[in-house]
Image (cartoon, rainbow, N blue to C red; front, side, top):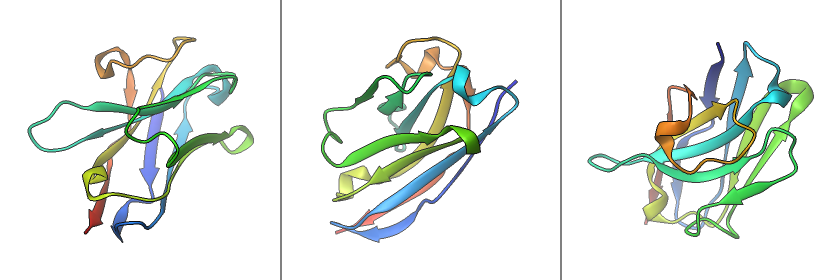
Length: 124
């Protein structure tokens, strides 16, 4: 089992920045592909960014490319999402996810482990 705990959400004005954190426990962090998804009411959970288990590849949704950066601190078992130039449409609950698959998956249904989510609200 893997436990994921997110933090760092909050309220920010458009153009501002936030950094989300996700602490993983229960399995060696360096064996997991990690990702961030987000969800708004009435919509499906959507892919935001992911980093392959070995840190050798990252990928981003087109809507966040150039603004968000995913990275991991392996000794501290922590995943981060640095979000810059935030837009009102980035408002959502953000979820940390993990999978034992060695590739980046874009379908939320294929990720096994999830955190409880953290709210990000961007005001215009």
